[in-house]
Length: 147
Image (cartoon, rainbow, N blue to C red):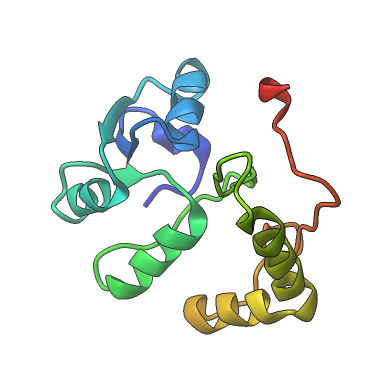
């Protein structure tokens, strides 16, 4: 089990190539390492390597990892939560007529609580209040690095 960041030292840690978890692992290598970073083209392969013992742990988005841990509860468990939320989005062509309708549907699903209900149905617990399940934007979110 890995329950503290200090326990990352000496471990083989896997993640999805190019994901926020890979960035975090690389940025924190000196602080919590040394550890080995193993990257994969997709979380399924990374998680399978945890199951087979080729990796000590996998880092990634909490919801998919929790869902995976539910399916393999006799073999793996969730551990640390870094508590670092980040924004996710959908890409459209700039002139796509569906943008406005899509955004309005997302807002309504969030405001009505339906997304929170779906989250709880599939994960078995309510979403955190600061999650994307509740975030509403008055205008398109543009990450600071993209401005």
